[in-house]
Image (cartoon, rainbow, N blue to C red; front, side):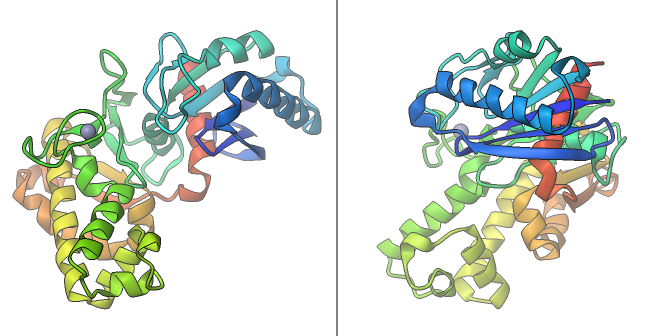
Length: 320
Ligand SMILES: [Zn+2]
């Protein structure tokens, strides 16, 4: 099969040609340039696709299908990107119609987390596992939930929005309008922002600041994880809180979906057993032993190619 995959982000857009086995034959990328708006993006994108097809000696008619992975919120049925955060000039952008008109081939779209779940289902270490959850666990926190071999899309494309599962209705406000969402406690950017604010406000001496070169502006999740790994008392305490909140979210997923695997993205890929070992213990406070014992918690093996593979997996799913 010849599949075209597009991974749209606020910073860059990636385009790849690959097949149903997850082999990426060629890939290109371009800056998204949000301030220019979606129309100019569309023109540059079609040029890039033409170049990629020409380089591979393919015509658009040789493509079996096209898959798009993009930030939510979106309407999958209408093929629209609604109002992606960090993409302020994009409103109701008809990406699926644009690509369908230009290429004359079937086009499918889904959000990044769902695309990641489909990539794990089709290409990952747990491929073919019918009950599987992918947690992005990166800058933000989203999930792609596979139930009985199918993606859980939901009534209005919100299936798997576990990042806005409320852990504490009296907690800090979330940009989504709710309070105390899981993503506030476990999304990499939110964790780093909250630590930075606390370290500066209380003038805390911690190796997190050393890891950031002494500049609070450079505190990121990696500086936090590295300081915790070194045994810095403040970082270790905060790491335990992070693990506990994540265990709460994962325990809910275990009891709702009873998956045989939960595959986790960036943060789990970078921190490995330093995160996963205490997490496996902590989830026992939030789910029944049988649900915990039935589920493997593991890092994704697709990290580097995740965006491209997610888009290819969306294309495959659209053809079924
Ligand atoms: Zn929220």
